[in-house]
Image (cartoon, rainbow, N blue to C red; front, top):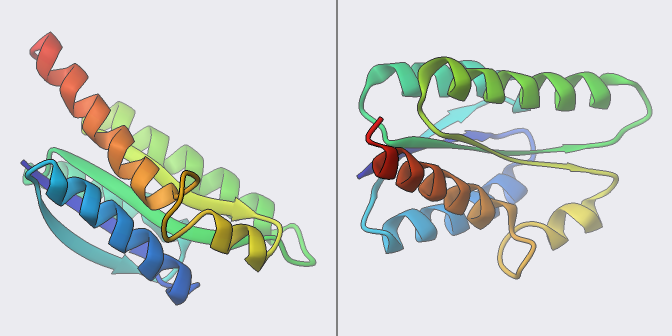
Length: 140
């Protein structure tokens, strides 16, 4: 199996933590991983679409973080990145997980990255693996 991780670099420290845990999950399942970086969460859907359409990957984990600020920019980025990632998997049939932290502050982001039971990087990789298994079971 081969997987793509598409990661938003805007919060680089958080992305690195999410990447490490997602990569560990994929590799523990016997998968190979390719990493692709984009500037922010808004760019994740298009990069995921490129990866999914390439035919090289069994699944794509989309990782990053959006932390609420003083403007409505947060709402637009969160909504559109989530919608876009969902659209990619529905259009291509390639599992694409939403491993984007959508949080109020850095403390919440740190609590949801880099280990522990709330690690969104690991959760995204597990979601991709679960959908790959369902696809295999159904023969699609």
